[in-house]
Image (cartoon, rainbow, N blue to C red; front, side, top):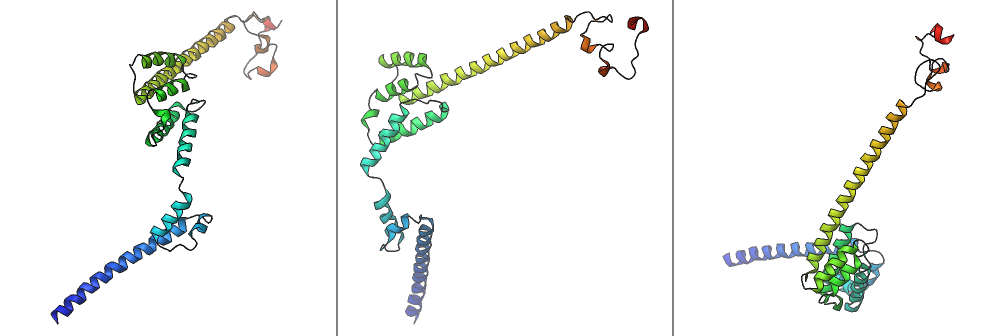
Length: 225
């Protein structure tokens, strides 16, 4: 009897584990079905409703082949070689790093030896020709052999250049403001002699321009005469 009771308890435990696993698989299957687009759900026709079978069927129909993936990376790399254009430099450098890493992972010939560094320098030439010429010589002399170091130095140089340009624009703006202020002061000093005896324009004169006269103002009899 004791053995029977023990077997019964083991059976209950095993049954609970089985039901828990079955529910988890059922929930995962439902989740996959709910998240798959209506277009892709057609690929699951006649497929057993099990997560493994669903994922395997989708991979077979949707995962790119090795050849297709290779061409995608080649296209992306060649696009990066055209340079950043009007993109933010930091964004472009992050994208270069991503594409370069993908090219390394598939052993793309374009990223072997000095080729990627030469491509990088030519890509950024439109942004900083001095940087390109300087580091092209360093590359030829063997002083640079790491694309990551090259990218970091370009970013540092670009940041420093941008800071200098911002400072130069600020100085120019301050200089222009000072000139305008001096010109304004000069104009105030250069106001003509008015017939009333003061230095101002006729439009500023209470005798000639009635519309600007204060209510408390009264004309000087001698001046008005």
